[in-house]
Length: 434
Length: 143
Image (cartoon, rainbow over all chains, first blue to last red; front, side, top):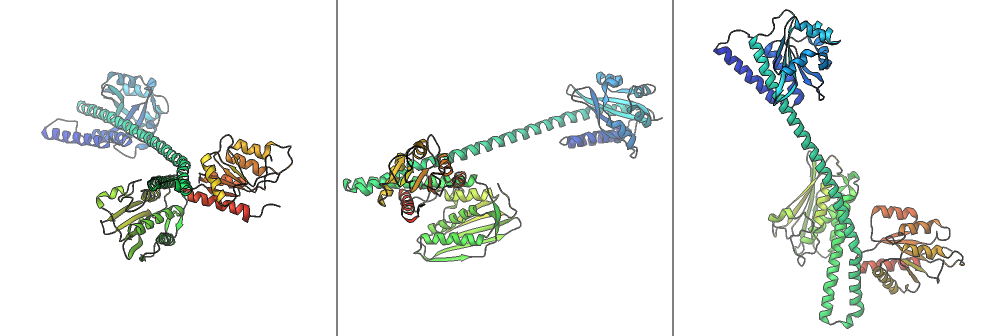
């Protein structure tokens, strides 16, 4: 490697080399250990001599060798020995001197020998084995801070680094220090972000559990007064109808129906809350059987209609059976409900497996829905039809969504006004409880 | 056991729920033998309080709400089922809670039956009537 005269091409070479090395440092900033190896390796390659990168310990009392590189491989062993012991600064006044100087210090003979003599064993023997001829100690300084030193060792009878080599070494040291400073900053920032994120997640989990528990208690405690309102209003109607005129009876009817509705809402909310909280038991579930049972149940509720049902054989799923029962029940009850007025009512059920999911669908030829509002379908209490048109609490699909998502799956729906709807849900093939 | 002989002991803190239950029992002509208690302490007192009285005919069934002031329904159940004198009295747990924990614990303690109080009165009435008829008329009491 040239330590001779400069000329234009030599200068350009150096510049190219320089930017190549700096590029390598920049690339490695995000990976701290790789950066340290890169610094040692590139310095050794550029200068053609053994290089060691030593960083100050957090307490500032030791220099720990973090990376070494010998441009002639195969000499690794003795050098590695040198590398493994932290050099106590106290043991090496020369190193302290170099650090304090803030610029590189060259130890040519005989001071290199002195340097070796100041080392404790086993470093002293290792340095002797290394056959240290001269050592350039370049401090790594950036932004008012010293991070450690770069050691460049010329072995045996090789001439010590001349001016150009030293300048190059100083340059490399300066940039290495900056790269180290940046890398540490990056690492600290990442750590902080990760910590904040996990704290935030923990907080959210707690808040979520509290909300679930709250919604459960509220729904639970509301049942008793709702029961009283409904019950006593009914008793009033049954036992004192004579004392009420038509208008009085009508008002009473409103009270009863409202209490009834409130009862349904609280029961549905309780069910929703329960599905969020109960433990899941994953097993092989016969989806075919579940779907058929749910369909039969739905049809029993509205028997005097003409049904045209098409069920393709359904692949089994790895899931919690009782929770999936809720899913089928809700989807099929909806299919039957919203296709009222259609004769025949056509309901199709199908399912297929892909690489990582099993996707089921329920399709009906009912009133459908406006796709513009598709994202509201699965939210709690959101409905796309009014009470007089179709009864319901707006919790059923939220339940389906909640259950499927707990399994790690997803739900979605397609529909068109007046042209029916298709509800899909996908479950991962590998069981995943959550 | 103290008090008049009675056939149904209803332990229920809510006056409204108690009234609804009584009306339902009345429909089946079972209301006369009902003795109502308002909390867990009163229940324990009723069954174990007057230990010097000659033993009376135990009730045919106890309808026990779980959520009670002073002493909880589960504690009352535990006492009833662990005491020789009352162990064989059928206890039907009536409650708002379908929570698995309560269900499991009630059965573990020896509840004979567990009914979740429905919100709809018609359903509630039907449940009470059905149990009344079952325990009073269908079931064979201990000799």
